[in-house]
Image (cartoon, rainbow, N blue to C red; front, side, top):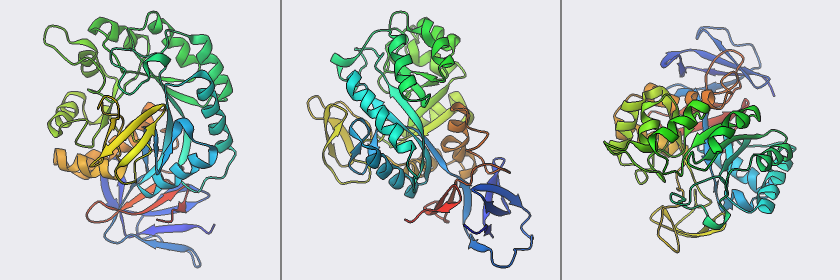
Length: 383
């Protein structure tokens, strides 16, 4: 690929926009003064009237475009990669819902097979295990019969099979002995999140002190705050851990989103999708792991109980929702989809920022903050 120059756009650098020229070469970014001379024969992308921001990072998603991660082949995972990229997501983790050992291992094998493929879409960075060490009381869409107690040997086997690519895990702090395993999980290369939990305040803080760094879909599938019993919710808000947020207007009221941002600060909230296979598709009947799901007016719920089961959200829509919910400027909201997940997942040396030498994962937004174009590793995505 020839070197490419992105010119005339407003570039998001250090929480502000300024006129710069971006040179893309070998999949990396070089930030230049806007007046730099463009070499003859170089490919030029004119971003006049547009903004250039880092590619979005989704650390929690179960599928899209008719593909459920728990039953996705390597080719199916590539379908999600290609769809996600059109919506501004340039990197993602595939979230495996609690399932049988055999199916979880099959999912890991499919992930491994995808890693051998040359993707034409978003970067599939690793695996997120949502369970199986979760509370039955706040199971949400988790199949109760498949939830487990503490089992570090099993997790070690999963990580070995995944060649170290399980990057993220959600646990419930009240599972007996699980908090003691958090340091070992970190040694395995996992970032630990707490969620699907009715943990009391002290037990949640114990998990945080042991090294838990995030809270899964904050406010959803967990015991909520009470002035006398702050519970896991109180610990998540008081501490410095990151808080995931599903900003689809269903899982969280706009006022709740504003409250979360005020309590945590803009630097500690991460906009996820928690999307299921229905994302990008019409209403209908779908699957989420072993569950049957019905989507009506874009709202996904378990067919047998009516419990909300993931979302049909995409990150470009999450961005627009956040702007509408908060009335904050774009430069304050962009880090929720870029810098914050990059820092949590320890990939900020390569992704999440527009800086020298970082991966050329870029999103071009028009004047209405709609996706105009997306670049992954310097390659322009066909939309």
